[in-house]
Length: 158
Image 1 (spheres, helix red, strand yellow):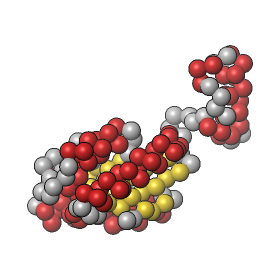
Image 2 (cartoon, rainbow, N blue to C red):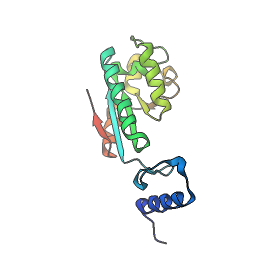
Image 3 (cartoon, rainbow, N blue to C red):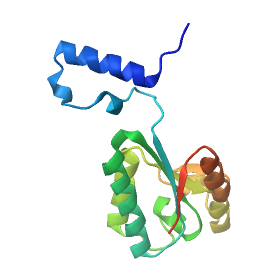
Image 4 (cartoon, rainbow, N blue to C red):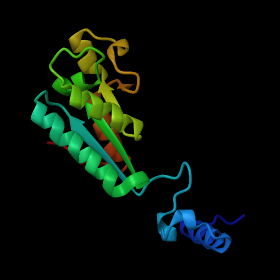
């Protein structure tokens, strides 16, 4: 059985939808249609490793901007290590503004993954239970950054 390319599937689907009169989809070109579970074109991992409020705001603004620009055609991971881990804590040990807490939670609801470094948790005497429910534990944050890059993720660091 021949495998049909994603581009061909998109064009066929777009033609079918156009023929049925699916005006609700607007004028999106076939290349913009995405199938559930399909890998996005873009993948990026942010290193989040500082405690300063200006840093938090800058990185989270960038994450939001990437979501606005690429929509569902991007996979975003934020790997929190060192002092940055506090944005993922139920009870942060360093100051984290309510605005930052809300933005992190909102971004998680939009599909941004937040990874928490296990080494940092250990150094703070924390367990995975200290993390917000959406935070994903990774054994070594630096290894997470490396492995995601090996999987084709662009690496962003401030």
